[in-house]
Image (cartoon, rainbow, N blue to C red; front, side):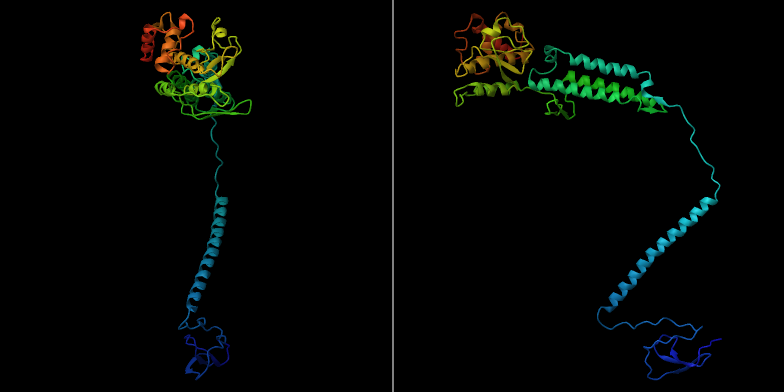
Length: 389
């Protein structure tokens, strides 16, 4: 039973009008001319809808009202979700606590170490033997595999770097590589054995290694290579050298011009003091010659500092003669091929004149074995065509 005394109160129909409450029930009369802005409290126990401000006829107040409701809904939704997560987490925790879940363990299995597998020792030994085999090659053996140029020797170094790197990786496997599957370890050993086989095959076949190499050397410089097999475009080199018009530098020296010719083969000038500083056993030729070439040092042309005149234009003929030795070596694998017979120097002189642009006076004032003839010209032509006899 309501204890609210009789009086005028907001009508329960939300019309904003005042309606008479007689102490027990609403009566029909509405208060005439009464303002609805006071919003008195409804009688206890009597349902009353919340008071709502009538919508505005103009302006944007309605937009802000909607956004405000949306914000409340979103924030309320977040709070509601967080609260729901908390309830669910609490319920799940209680549920897990109530379950009688037995503890589980994984049955242990035998563990195998890669260094204990049957093929491990043989693999390590093979890598060590291969490193030693190629590390100790003589210059002649190296240049029987790679071009007799600086780039060729760099390719050889690339091979050794890669081989050493792979061998080094094996060092870290014992103690760190184990498995419960012995076949997995055996497959790993087979993989590394195949890697070595393929690397050696690429080197001997003169193929690109397909890796980038960057090595910091003991002097702090960085050696970099893309691991590609070097090639010498002999025809292009000969074409340049034949047409090159050598000029002295400001001091009158032809050494820079000579180096330009050597650049076509990736070679360099080095100076000898009248003794044989090369790897070749050339008797007294090293001391008697203005310059000389050694196939075991194929990136170098030795200038005899005791005899050579760097300001003499004839220096260019001398360089072309020595470069012809190199070209013959690149073609035939030796500097004195069978087709040259007993006159390898004469054939080399002919090669220099015919294919290196040397003057035909190259043999003037030189010993008999440097003299050219129709026979030496024919032999030089055959070598240039790839016929070494």
